[in-house]
Image (cartoon, rainbow, N blue to C red; front, side):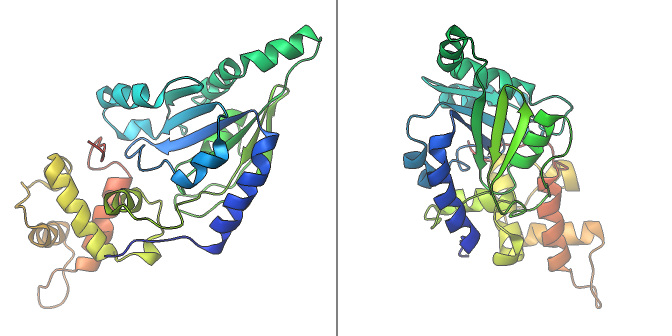
Length: 276
């Protein structure tokens, strides 16, 4: 199965990020906690340069809490702070504002010495469906950006004033021009960062079943049987258990495939990190 999705608006978005980077003091890099390292776009590394970064490991409610500290430690360092986040929880994103002030303390003090209240300007970036706009709305305390539970909702840059001390630039989700690493491409497809319309959901569901079986999570807790090790056989079992049957008693693999992907993405299989 070939996984690649880089529509024209992403090319435009990368160009706009490159042009706007000089306007901001720091970066808020939104990562999906289920596959945080797969969500880091190498196309943006050179663009970001040495700008301070707050890594927001979003959707932290969908992963085991004890598995996040090691990821946070690996992502943190000089000029970089990583935090866990569930941007759908009320006021959860306040920690982002606090960390931005920590990273930009030198600018704040410099302005303060001149009797000026510093305004921190941050760019929010991330792969599609990582929750960038939801995070910004959480910071604001109300909806100011368009959100949606699928990839590619935000199509253009948008400045949002959080308060008198913080402004953020919302950007469209961007992927790499070419997804060379198949495992990373799969992880991004599993979490919904690649539009389902451009992948074979049947094959993707089989790959997800294989992945979950290797992790020893998800299938038994959700569907009540021990995986056989044969993904197609397990998909057949899931279809029959869920009552997805066509005429003649044949399993409806299309419905079963969609159900497997939906159950994983909505956390019905339990708390799971895809990256080991």
